[in-house]
Image 1 (cartoon, rainbow, N blue to C red):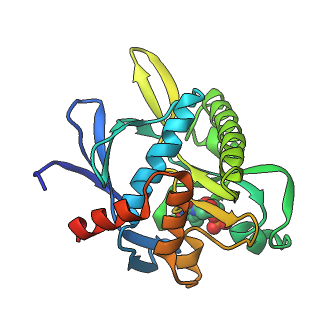
Image 2: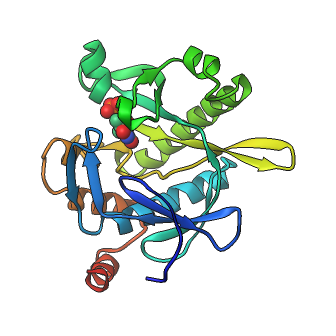
Image 3: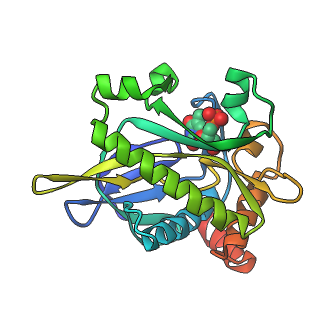
Length: 252
Ligand code: TMP
């Protein structure tokens, strides 16, 4: 690989300096982590699949005017993105009760919620990403009130769109996590969707069987993690089985 300046390395991705000052290159690793890095493994090919899946979903969101950082896919594992000032909050949108919601509040697993729920978590690994309220976000100035309003409105629109999109592929969008950043143009700031949208940060259940097609297969040791990610990629039409096999052979 060409030598490049590494800007940041996260659990699943690396950010390199981009070709222009306001850009970065986002590299998708095969590393999987859960429970704040306590559980770790490599899922061969995951990075390639997430790169393609996120490219497709970010492009579709751009088509409906949801501003996001994706510019273009560069190769099998990398995409060019716009450099943003990341807002240190994780936004979780839930349609069906599972995961930490069920544990924290004792809600019945699998309950279809009467309306989507948005939750906020502080992006802070040392504190284990604690859940926070809108009051915390405003009081500690992690986002301004108008920025938070925009984040909530965009998150509902993204949920509505992605729910329908996945539904058409016989997949239930159970919940997912989003991140946003600020883009400065002269003195004006806009809120832009960042990060990735993939089976790493979405819960996706097969509509008929409720089979898990996402990172819960890794978190819960359900096996066939790579197969589930491939299934999502095939249903989305981003990578055929033969194309994927070719990629992985040349990659390893
Ligand atoms: P949770 O039920 O564990 O709170 O997860 C809610 C959603 O957020 C689920 O789709 C997985 C995703 N998520 C992440 O992307 N990163 C994280 O660190 C956590 C805890 C959840």
